[in-house]
Image (cartoon, rainbow, N blue to C red; front, side):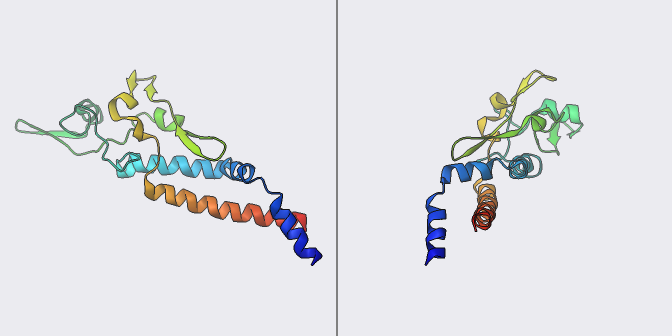
Length: 161
């Protein structure tokens, strides 16, 4: 009975916001979150709403200037054809700026939308949803958080025993 009382007391003493905050502050988890966002942009060419990356006002779906710079185009007669979708990687400056910020019980992905090298505002051109995860990728993060919480509780329980 004494052992059961210890366990119940142990769980009653948990500060769940502190526990979640500690799990979310894990560098490995934060890197995983950033990589999921970068994967969406670079491999899937979608924003956090699952919408294909599209430069606002572009009939091509992407910036013709970008394709010309990257040689990701060809001219067929009078038609301009693009064959490399926009990934927002370009110089890597935007990807390098991406990081996770932690609030009390949640996280956000932030990054520098303004390219210093190219004087270009990605948020203005592609919208604020380029930072963030799709529902599918959020579920992957929630699964990782759940596993990390289990490990955290187990380790704390072992230390208390």
